[in-house]
Length: 106
Image 1 (cartoon, rainbow, N blue to C red):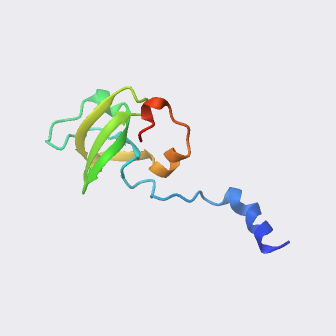
Image 2: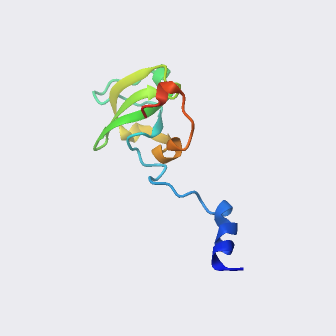
Image 3: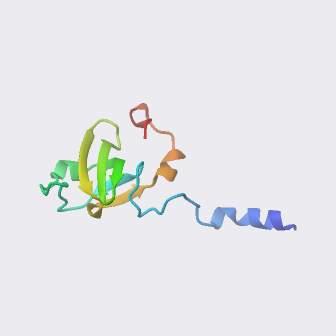
């Protein structure tokens, strides 16, 4: 076997290469909000928001602005510290998926 056919056989078991680390909050990432999270102004994030996953639409240091939720039905547009966020899917993973029309701008 030549070198290419051997490496081709192992592609399925190698980890998927992605542009961003899955734990790094970045624009385009789908994130969840942690328990006891507060908005940038210090007010507590309501549980209704914490039960949903949100797309990051802006980032300035450790201040992230969240936009639409995963369904595309609700929009948040409120800044929150990245310390309260956990990345569910990074933007590179999301690009490879078929999205509904409501989320097509992310």
